[in-house]
Length: 477
Image 1 (cartoon, helix red, strand yellow):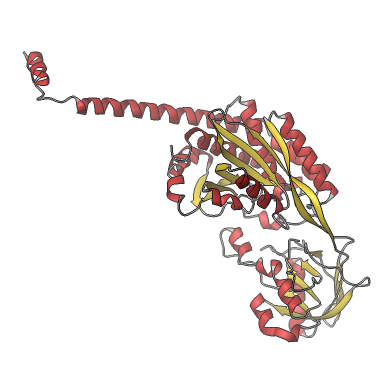
Image 2: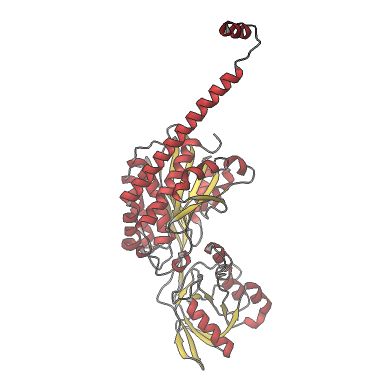
């Protein structure tokens, strides 16, 4: 008798089936969600398997770093890198490959630099390990000499005022090695390299030497950009190894100290260069772009393997892995090898301008420019107006990528993708282990020997996996 009673009650409207339909609907949704999660885990595992087994990124990077070598923007080696990467992006099956013109300023180092302590009572004459900074001026033909003033900051230079006229200013503020993240140490010291020589030149200093940007005590000098504004003539500016910075400081503390400096740098003027771009067009939402990239230029010492050959090759490998796995993205996946990040950002600025002029929309842009060491996760950022909306899927990504020791944190993305912020998409940066990065950064040691094939491949797989998730689910879907 129970069945007729139920039927009568239902027919009379006394019992509603809405709760039952809701339970069934939720159950179906949970099953579908579980199936999606399982599908994603399987696909991400396949990405890692392909990257680690093939290790294609290392083969490409070895050629870029060691056969082409260092490739400062405007140089013949830089043009060779443009040709090489264009051909690779074409041969792996990109739908479109092109070169985006930009104008760069070509700074040329010239002959080997010299810095020497002159006839000091403690050590006599001593040659120091040095590298001219990008943007440095040359000395007179036979060099220059002068007394040295040690400072710790640009503020200290400004307070010294006219007393620095015809002096050699020595910036000697070390890394704060208490910082767990070495990029924080770098950020706390690098202003003296970028802006210190300009501040000293305004006060009449004849040259500048700085402590290299690393927390390690060694004999390896680190180059990097220094910026002179139009109101002042550039002066010679060089970096000293950290050990030699310590030695110079000891000499100064014991009494008056003189240096001899010789450089032959020159500005070779504006040159036509190119960023290299390749893409796979989306099948469903081709107007939503997911960009991945690094910068193709490097400094003119070493081979630019970590900075930023690794980021370029990893970005190229994203397209390669999707092709060999026969993955057809919903959205357009674009690899951008930016030009001139090291001393001008011409490539990144031009790319954003052209993209804005073409009314493109970058749903996401991921930059790899922190070295080729083991990836630890991604930092992410966006315009404040859309940040909350664009990051609601981050917990889902974190859960799926946790087995690969990847975490997500709010933070910066990268210098080249930064100009895309106005498009109100999500900007991300790959975050590798940074502990050894600044031992190598901008030095002769930045060669393929400093790269481990597995670590490089893990970075490629991490970026590819994140691109897959963004492509499949979007940011607000």
